[in-house]
Length: 425
Ligand code: GLY
Ligand code: MN
Ligand code: MN
Image (tube, rainbow, N blue to C red; front, side, top):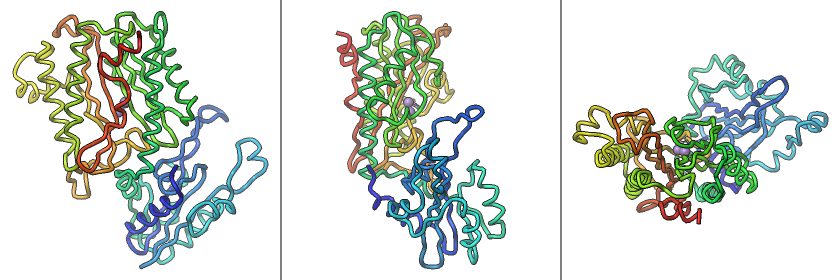
């Protein structure tokens, strides 16, 4: 759990980043219509949640900054017995004032009127320039006389790069639930079953353990389906001698986990599957060892490409000299994606990879990223040894950068051939 004093600290920090004589606006997420009067499950906007800890919709957090001081203002939905009967309790402005470390609280219907008041004598407005929220049109209209509109999202995203110890605890909790889910998948008897049944086993563990939702749509891809990177149909049969690529992670208390394991349907890897699997695993372990403060992601990306390219040459998937193959991007056919990404409130956390001067950001203690090398051998690729055709492998862990190196937060999720096979005994 994140304490209110941490939210207070975040707000102070963001306020300090705003230029004097400015107003900053962060908006809650909107409900999205599924059809008619039915909505998709609500998920708070990550930047708004990071700053406020407030889960309700139709809310806004506003920073009003003069030359030296600032105040924070939260807008919340009005209490309404009839609406609450249908849609659940609202906190309301009186309770919100007690609960949250903000200077003022108003009901959301006062947002525009108050915004007009706040922008008097101000020069800049900060808001999420990419927001599609329907309130943005009026915000722009009200504030069009201000000399500049700046992107508040960039400032919050920057803060989200470094995780606090309480954030790390929540990520660890998400990973521990995801671990149980992957282990259930490993021990579950897959004979004659479908991908969606395995998905159900995994997501059962998420929900059963209090995870709000998955952090992204689960990928349960048997055999050649694993070669479609974002395969989410999950509707095919599990075929006895094939591998299943499972990329699934829960979201717990708004924090993501993002784990991929590739496991045999039968419980045992074939010789060819083992060769390919161990090659990817070796690369993954070597890359994780490189992670420490000061290292840049581009360096680990290049290294992963080199290691995988060499591995593919050894297995006869690629032919030629590694340097030339990489120059000609031949390896990309089998390893087309990045080595990893930031992770936190979002699975692909919206933290920057480059600083204000467009210089690449080096790893620092407190950052969390995924490491996920993969090899994808299409069943129709006649250029590769037959035994590897139709196999797709990705191995993904979640890594915390520490003072001197890193901690693999998902280390306890079975990963070696032996560990995975031990589940089917
Ligand atoms: N699950 C999405 C990814 O691995 O990036
Ligand atoms: Mn990932
Ligand atoms: Mn993933």
